[in-house]
Length: 157
Ligand SMILES: [Cu+2]
Image 1 (cartoon, rainbow, N blue to C red):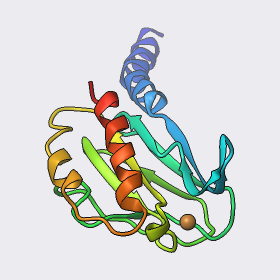
Image 2: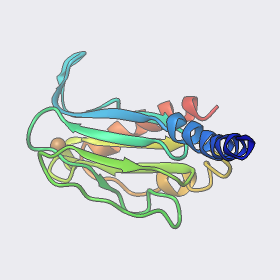
Image 3: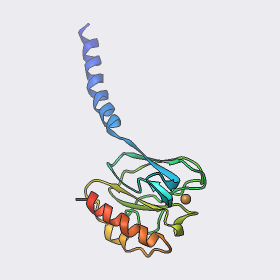
């Protein structure tokens, strides 16, 4: 029957692009660890600390060691983006839709320098960069973030 074929084809044409869009969104892992596996002197780290992803991608924060979490930092996420705060010692997944830079920290270890940055590609992704860089930091995070911003600069070229 010809109409069955037509129904089948139009369904395929409708479903196929949706499948492709869903399949192209990736999940990236960021480990929350007591020690940097590549430099044992660095304690309380997100690995990788800076990550560049596409809109619609998900970051899975993996509780590699207990005692850590992820929390967005005030003034360090794009306008209109939703702040987050995960539970300590738990994995946490977050999908990023809005282009821009997202600064985050581990709540218990912020002053010890446990901070990270997610960069989401897309139009206007540098709109909140200056504001995020200008946020005043305390403790060890001040110095750590200086290094991370240099990485961000490279990744946004
Ligand atoms: Cu921590």
